[in-house]
Image 1 (tube, helix red, strand yellow):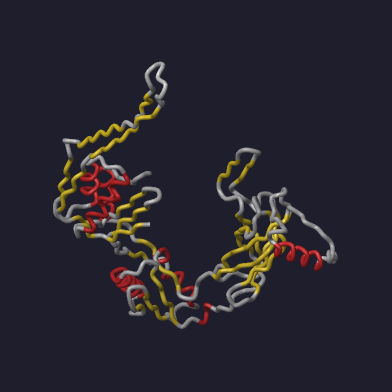
Image 2 (cartoon, one colour):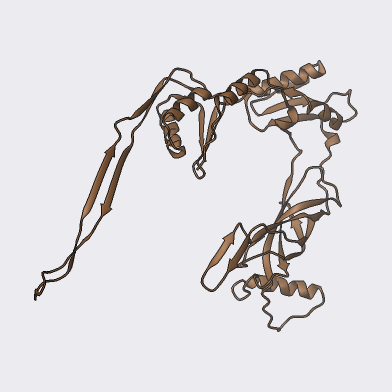
Length: 368
């Protein structure tokens, strides 16, 4: 469990820098409509495993795929009984980046779909990768790199990471290009990664000021249209000029809580209304101390029995701490107030939920 806090010196420097912060380049805030990647997927076989492949009796499709592969290579296995343990059926996934050209290479991810125990040391055999339209855009092949491992003995086993999934850097070669011509664009539509009306308006203003003509128009909180300026030789030349325009994006007040790890990240725009937070330390301890009772010496009818004994201690701390948070306090004040309670990260999460439920937390609370 961990929580991200800032010291007062860091907080003060953070607020001072935020008032005069440098602008963010437009390329880091928006995507261009039509310029995107495409997902690819394929079914293949990984061979060369050290006895950790699929159990072919349990995974029949691995045997069928292996037989089909061998027949294409001129090896007839019909009617033969072969059950290798060094073959695993896998799904291969990749992303075809925008403007990718035939012959260039991309990374692929390999994941076992059968009962293979480990893909370490395996080799992916030539696997075509299809897009959503069913066309083949790339072909993958190469050695699989696995970060995890598993070891097993007669009475114990150990596993670290995921040994049934791996990657192949530059493992696929692009065979087909996407039918998209950027030079035919009649306008550029900029899509904000984090929709916000204020940020979209600032983008419109900055682009119009850069070109000294009203070519940009905000459509909504997530879209800004930019007309093609005929002074540029192509839309690509114009985009290279637009993407370097600097913007000061508006930040939404937000608190992100990861309950699994106990991580809490608070934005600098968070504001708190007047609220009092109290933390009490009520501790209840229950101990079972059974007592064995034996009969008197030389007793004929006595039995040895176990008599239950329960010890209950209740500790209600008298020095209960109360932190009072004044009107419109900032992130630094919130952190100081909660630190004054000496709360743990999990208690911090509960306190933030309670402040939000009370209507005193003026920020979006994102719980993951």
